Length: 412
Image (tube, rainbow, N blue to C red):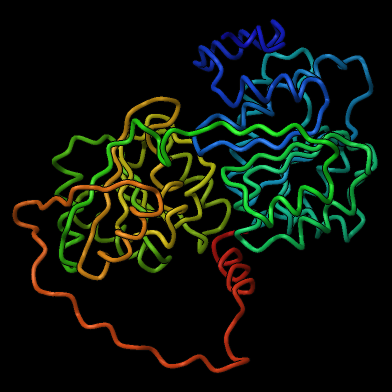
């Protein structure tokens, strides 16, 4: 099927061709016609399936079709859980809108950047706003944004939004919007809390679920290499130097761990940098751009970019530290093998990781053969697990508070 058969007009077909897209993905085939009809939509599809283009193209076409109308009133609001995803969606809008006779003016409202500058940009007029919930609410409370003319609301990576503890913020945003609008929600997963949220604001939505044959992209070659914890660094350097990967994305569990590992790689002659919530937004934007431009070979990151960031032709992802959950594992390794390309995902497994890796495999219904690299074998035995102290009631953060704290730390 071609994009033209979905109702996309000729003004965009050239832009689609120049961007290297030959035919729509499953989610694009199903979502684009629904959005063009003005219907509410709940779309569920796995990471890397092309959800962003599914809503960007019809939104831009709507602007082009109404180009004679007065512009510079906010018509579209796109909510994202992270700053990086907001910046990426803005880049997709710029890519596909560049050949329009009158491209819509897009503004990004995210934390980490000067709020007064963002407000000044709003006063100059905007057609599309991309925002994280916290920064948008800050501007709403200051009465510095006019949402009365809004026609379309997009909530992107909705499950991640709720996982990060922003249910209350999203509901506050919804209360600030006009009731008559088109609502589009895109998510990789759907649980009861997300279904409950959609029931509060959607009107007879069309539901689309692109079935996935497996829990991960089929073109990812997944590997599990057993290695002693003190040998992970040397093994990582060995793999980078011998496997022929042009670029590698390495996931670690903490900001401190990312900084230490990147410094060790750099001292060993491997051009590496970090991406995590301890950096300013300007730093993160620059590093991500350098990695996409292949100026940096190895990027050591926390889970801040495990979802929603599209890095073309990334050959390898390495789990230096295992992720917290099976879903996080899927979204991490989904940074490679995007758009049908092949890729490798390597997990480094020590004694203390075996049980957790087995749980991940069970939940996502795979079983990986354990490998061993000569000179970096797993040695010794697992240390006995010590039982922790019983929690003191009233002195520990709730699950929701922990999620909020993590989100703030990681850059929301």
